[in-house]
Amino acid sequence: MSINLEAFRWLRERTYAHARTCGEAGREVSTLKAWCLQQLQAWLVNHPERDEMSASQVVATSRSVARYVSENYQPHRAPPKTTRDQRLAEQRLSTWVVDELQERGRRPTIRNVARTMGVSKSKAGRLLSREDVAPVRKQRKVSLGSVPRQVLASLEAMLPKEGSTVVSVDDLAGRVWAKSSNEATGRQHRKRIKDALSQIENARLGFNIVTSSTLAAVRRGRRWKSGEADAALSAAEARPSLVYPIEALPKRPVGGAFWTSPEVNDVVIMLRVAAQERLPYPDLASFIHAHRLVIDPQPLLDIAWRCSQPEYSRDGMLEQMRRKASHLMDPRWNDGRRYLYGPLQRLVNSIHLLTEDGYWARPAPDALDTALHVTQYLDHVDESARIRIDMLRAIIEALWESDNRMDPKAAVAVCRQLAQAEEAGQWTPADGHLLRPEPTFAKVLEVHDDIPF
Image 1 (cartoon, rainbow, N blue to C red):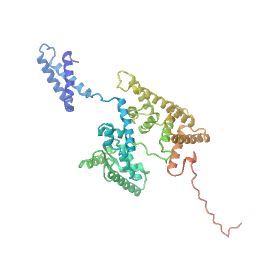
Image 2 (tube, rainbow, N blue to C red):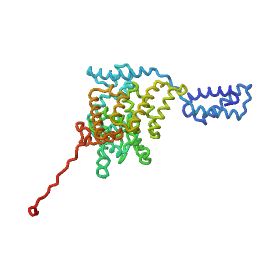
Image 3 (cartoon, rainbow, N blue to C red):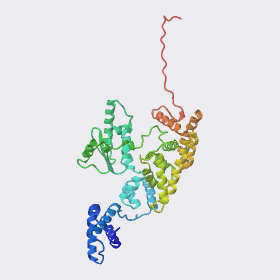
Image 4 (cartoon, rainbow, N blue to C red):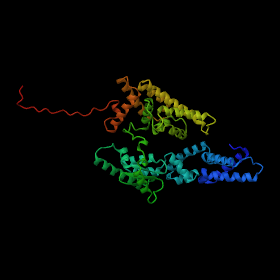
């Protein structure tokens, strides 16, 4: 604070106005300090009656104002032209327009959707991409084989929007097949992954890919410029930390049609919460979607992403969520999202209630019923999904009847074993909680005539 409050207030207001127009380079501390010193000296010349400031005080005031504005300046943001309800209505309307165009026999392209809704093509493209509505793109995906589709799913998870990254070919192979110690098998896997990447690029799905012996430079949206992909590959080879961490992606779904179905996967995630597992962000997002706490869950997912960073444990994640909920109700921290207090508090209470079932080692069927009651999941699924959930409940009840010590943690472990068996073709939902016995081969006993009896 300056000894001359009038000069301090004048310089602060003038500096804020200057920071809006000078650009990022002009907001650096050294540049801004020189500008503040020049402005304050000129102001003192025009006001000779305010001569109580010494030269050192003028420099200190200029330095303090420059440092504060440089570190705390927030760019001006114009208020949105539409309300949240209007944006949500447009989001829901876009899917209806796609269905309407298909019924009329017209192609649901971005151009046709934009013309029908009366919006720009860029806005129509954003609306359709958020709802994962891309009929033309889905038709191009159909022509891909099994391996390219699995690789494409990994690339879309790595780059949900426009951007670029470098990924290891071996890591992509590990998402498709189990890692093998055989060197020849590894070479064959790398060859098939590179062929899949080439098919993805030729299918015009928005990915531009350049491969080396062990790495692949992937860009979504715009194409690589000349030499840009080679520079990214060279930098990743020199610094392995630049390679995309494949562990950050959700794990490859294990199982067949039953265990990989969305409703069974959601219920298993609820059991994992009851088993006191720390959920990574993709599974936590599925848990939030299963709750249906708000119509538009994206703001809640943003909070969950910040609270589920690797540095937080399971209890630390819950504590961060509780702290954010208290901030939403505090007027000093209110950022226009106070309506999220109730959904966020219900989410924390649900996780805490399910965790208690695992802490007290309650029977797995009771934990499953608690999860379905807390989330009200059965109120939002169709008849086929209810049948699969009833089959899962029957499996867990049979496990508990065969072993009354079957708690949520043990139930999750058995579910994973059954999913692996289904993927290997050794289990079907008709088998219930039992695995098929491995085939046994009887040994042939050679009987010789000279054996004495």
